[in-house]
Length: 251
Image 1 (cartoon, one colour):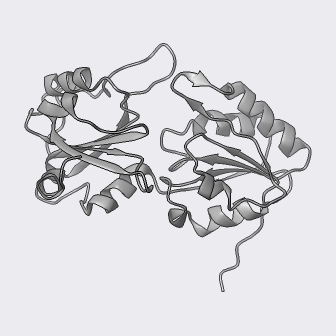
Image 2 (spheres, rainbow, N blue to C red; image 1 turned 90 degrees about the vertical axis):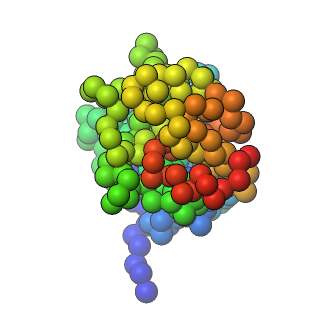
């Protein structure tokens, strides 16, 4: 029998909700949802996952999407301080893994600054869930010895269509782009200009691991015309997904 501690009074938990499927939550994450007093979820956290929360929990959505935040990051910090100072146990629920493009660094710094006890509970990041769905390793001994996780979404004033690296794109690498936006033509052009061949296999996955998941396979050259579906979208680019591209139907 596994013994999992309840959420503690005055503590904050930065919890990964995984890619969307409630079955992919960790046992620790699910138990914290059941025992926490306050839940602060991102917009991408599904209703099915929130339904696992205690019936008495206070749920305050704190999502920030499409440049129209419901609350500022400073506002989230204030909620963390307010409720933990009142003796409540607080789950800050983030989609995927809290340490992968989840603004965890800012919240960790704030919690440390105010001496608020906290714990980080990892979750399955979207890249790994997508690879499992596609039955495609992100690395391969013969085709991909490197894995690059990047995002085309940066802090205000630092928007970039493509991730940056030094020099040409590394050989034998799989590139995973979170939050690629909708500028696929410019994104593809910039990636090709960085040295990635236009014929490189590319897979776009919308709403990964959910009942509304959509998979579209293409190449970098034709990415601009791909019907990839609604956000959230994640892109996988590289020779390691060539086998998947040949097996999965487009659309």
